[in-house]
Length: 212
Image 1 (tube, rainbow, N blue to C red):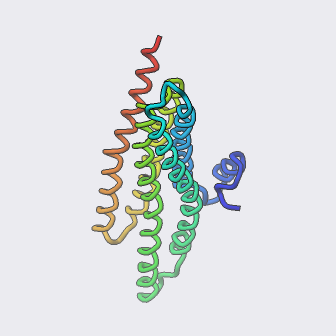
Image 2 (cartoon, rainbow, N blue to C red; image 1 turned 120 degrees about the vertical axis):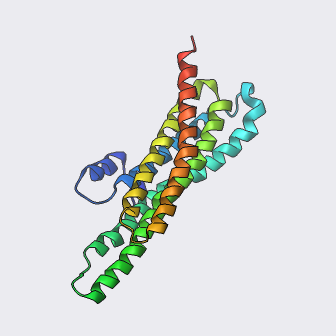
Image 3 (tube, one colour; image 1 turned 180 degrees about the horizontal axis):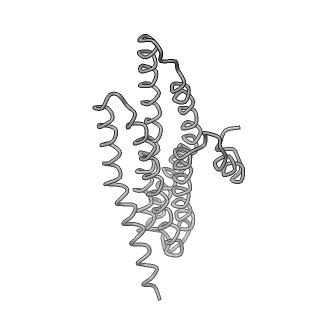
């Protein structure tokens, strides 16, 4: 059974165990999926309301885009687990002879690159989710604005979490230029979209505190 098909209880039980997967990467993807879903919820509570007729078409388009992002993040929970296995195997390769060391280095390089690719994609999908959530927060139903705020907070958490799963792997890369490039890519997403998500969450919180 794939991770996305497990119950919440099953997933969190495995997460709490000694099993190597799911881990931080899969958890980040799941948190991102929940964040995107909350944005969709705001849209669902907006469409069909006379008060929001002017933005209904935009809401429907945003919801369709959010649905695709949510489905991709759920798939990435499984994908993150799949790329961990070759990396774990690579650590155990023999390295007594020169040839063995060279082969281990080659396999490690590929495994580390693949292990970085998934959390980077998780970040990219979450970045797209942040853009949608900002629109849901600004134009969606006022009764669901707190959900838009939680959506933004969760997407920011998913971005930070996924970035850590990149950094732990780039730290081990022999190719330091590639490591620097991947780290910079994560840093840029955190600066732009992590900050945007935080701003949205703060704006929603301030709006809620000021509503009497």
